[in-house]
Length: 172
Image (cartoon, rainbow, N blue to C red; front, side, top):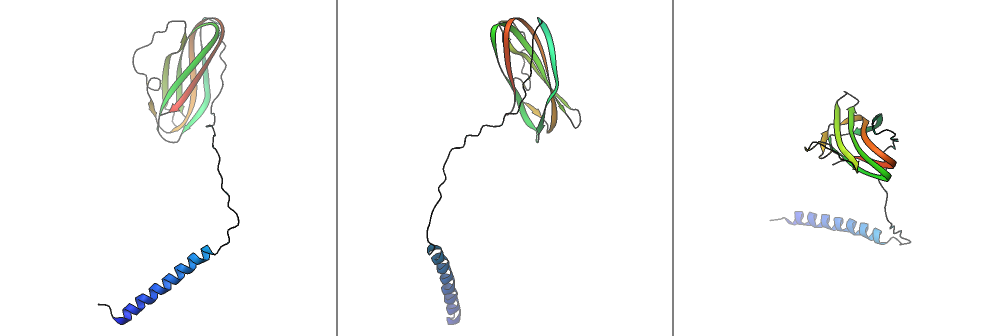
């Protein structure tokens, strides 16, 4: 059982705490409201475009072109990556375009090669091995590091017009 003295000390502490809490809340309430800013708006910031435009002029039925060390990507951690390709033509163009994407790690020369058979075909035949190609048909795990990219293209084409191709390297 509490003695009278302990009871009085607890009561005094409770009164002091209540006073300070009341004083604090009273001082907050005693401020004069002058003005309030309410900020609303939309955010529509596209992701920055990180890329390069390459020129491919085809003047022969069969050919190849290598774009060596055209880009550098920095993977700060191991990632699953995949190549997505979209293409279009204008005019009377028939084309079968194949390629390889080579990622070479700067620190130790480790190489990842992504084969891209039949990457863009219009009005021609293209035979490819019917297996899942890592990085092309399915993601491939690439270790962390800075990589130099080389793009090798091979084609058979005929006709006259324009061809456009977008090759995206995406992290899954």
